[in-house]
Every structure is written in structure tokens, then in C-alpha cells.
Length: 182
Image 1 (cartoon, rainbow, N blue to C red):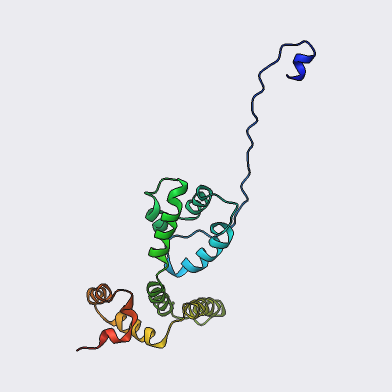
Image 2: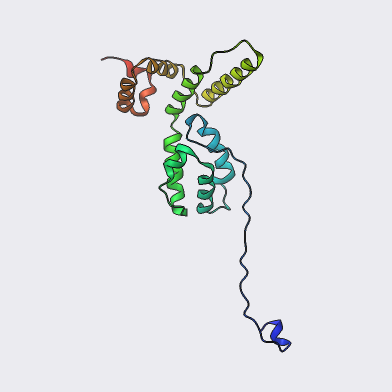
């Protein structure tokens, strides 16, 4: 019985109040599919969203889609925004962007494609920052010297030949032994 009915006034139906939950603002960097940025993106996303036990999969998926752009967003755009699709989409991203061999290759390429220095302090600072970032990333990926040699060899091969070797060897393409002729 409502308070209005007690006073002799006709009672109005009590409508349920819809609770709205304000999602916490996450200031995570967007990811566009550049594999050299994958690990730093995923580490922050994983800690901030993916491993949280108070988030449902649909919320995690919503955050993930909101942080992707370009090729990365395109990769998972076919998935409906449903909780059971979240892990499929996350695993697809990990498989496509988190391959250690591709990350190492792209980091070495990035390292060797840094612009030639100009004779000014600003140019030198920019080069040093980019160079150190690549070196630290390669250290994080535990790039072995033999892998560096293999990547350098691949950069000298015609791209069609390099792709054939990669397909035939799978993830072992970074092993220097793939260049042995038997």
C-alpha cells in the first residue's frame, strides 16, 4: 500500500526506478593495428579491463571496440557486440597482432627506417627517442642475434621469396637455419 492510499488519495502505480551506472573513464591509447604498438596497448588494456572480475564480457567488448581504430577495428568488425563474442574477438586480435616474429620484424624495420639525422638538437632528440624505443621493444621481445641476422637477410630478399619462406617455415622463419641449402 502506498503512502498516498493511506491518506485517502488514489494510489498511482509505483514504477521501478532504472539505475544507471556511469562507466569509469579509461584513458587508454587507441590501437590501430600497428603490431609494434600491440604489447604496450594490450598490457594496459589487460590490466585496466580484461582481467577485471567486476566487468562482464559485453562491457569489456564495448571498451575494446571503443579503443580500436583502423585495421584493428576492421579485423573484429564482423563480431556482434555480444558478451560471448568478446573472447573470440580478443583472441583474434592477439593472434593477428601479437605474433612475436612479426613484431620483431616490424621493430627491426622501424629501427632501420628511422630518418637520417639533421644537424640540429631537435632532430637528434627525436632520433634518440625513436631509436631507444625500438631497442627497448626489441629487448622486451628478447630478439636473439641470429633472429636479427635472419631479419636482415629477409630485407635483402625479394618480398615474394621472403613470403614463400615465411609460409613454408611458419613461426620458425626467424631461425637462421631456414637459409641452409641441403
